[in-house]
Image 1: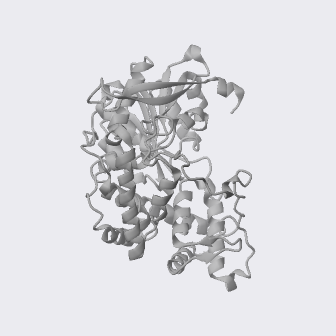
Image 2: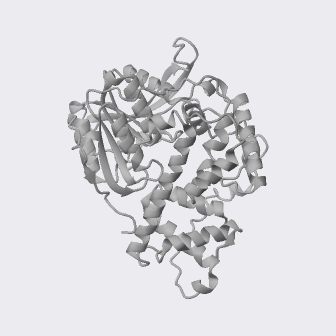
Length: 479
């Protein structure tokens, strides 16, 4: 960041009620950062921004907003990023006192529980995790809902003197935006929601929401493998009947891990976790394909002898001059936060038992063979025992019309929030327009010039995009 950019930034903390039904009760602070407009003489107002998660820092994204919004928008709007309640700099909700406590609980949890022992251990440790949260999380435990965040946002809007809200939300930030638009529809000037969650589904049926989310990853990964084959091995190292190779790899790793030439071991959970994470960013597809080919070669050493490896070596360990090789002393402060589950387990209703987890995970795995079980190991494992009492969550209505259309943006191959979710929200919201992008990856603003221009025009002069508009990304994967 240049000194000029840094000089545009100012910070503040906004006090809000922990419990909005008791406005004069206990307070918590919301940390905000403002990037001042480039041209204050032509300033239109302020745009609030949230990057999603739940649990991602809006302060960090607010400081780097030029990566996401068109320069003409930055000329005429202040942009305010904020860490929602319980996140990062905003009184982080923590379930542990020390790193050792967290490590002890997390050690027994598998990201992909398959055996009876792994399943039993993971369920036991998930319950232990929620027990720690009940003891340590504090007063925010019962007030981490998206509805509470939306009401915080309205207080922030009022505190800076804006009569109406401008908001850009990504991923989970789209839930914040759509919730705000239905609680305070008359206060919305312009709202852009990129990477849309199906908010009504999420807030009424957590299990079905997660099942359909796994399906979104399957759709995106299948499209990636087909694109890989279409461009050929010169551009995608895993090309050559990529789907069959992957299925054989998945079957082989279910029997046990394989060792790569660099000495690293790849288990089935490693494979699924790497693919799951890299699907978020098309810029990582090339490296992912090369890594997949290296795993394939390790499983098929005789066939691999004839091939030149195109695998990029892993980056060196960033271990702070060997200091991370030293075991931490007892009592190391716990510096993470537990807002991800704090929000999800408050917002998303699940059965209040883990008794049927194995059956449900097996069913999801049949429907979504790569990601079904992996997805089930998150919320479906943890939230049934989450210790919330009477959560203050918004469950509708969702169709209250705003004066100006809400602009939704959806990628065809978004893994985390599949395109179908954006289509649903376009119908469910009271007044919305959908921009579609023929793109991979999660969210798109900053990576599609046509989309960025259409969004800028809307934010600046309230001209919504044409109904049914379709744009291209700046770059397709494997280009």
